[in-house]
Length: 297
Image (cartoon, rainbow, N blue to C red; front, side):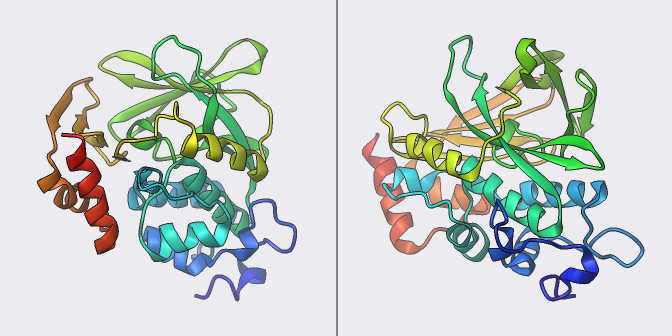
């Protein structure tokens, strides 16, 4: 089925003026990239329903790795849909939250979902107050809001999380999430590990638009205090075991709270990126990445 040509039959919408530029996305190429194997309903057509939302979100997070290597390589991170498509879909690279969730938003909008953005504060770094730098999505299906986030790295959800039932625990494979509500309508996504709930990030009801993510992206990719400056960050939520390479340390995260850590030298970096994260860089980029990694020894 050519999803773009059969938009009238599948309920796929976009059109001029679509907020997330879903009308510009090559939907067939995106669905092939994430390994999506059909739609919902008896005919297998794509529909803006909950089954499709789960299937697309799950396939996206499984297929596309979280990484910020362009920042390390000193390159600008473009957020227009065609640039993201070229990088994450056709070049089979990964990206960080602004790229990942902009791509997911464009695809969901193209299918016909109602998608809005939010800005979140990372809470994985202790009690310090962090700026709003994380981009997440809220997708409304049959009047109910769902948190969708393909861009929080190895601790992030692999499936949508309901927002209409604060405090409800949601099991995703071996991992359990919940969203709780604080004062002023602040919602907090938490992850259960080793019997302890850990806050991941908090976000307000304020809607964010693609233009807002341009500003956040500029900070995250250029500001000297950004966590992405000067080090390798590659992560994948995976299944039972989640993986993160930050700087020179590879971490394997287990649901029971255990962490396995080991140092990664420059000579094994490229093989590890391919084996553990499915990333293969062009020869010139790969050589520069190894040079940067070795320079820090």
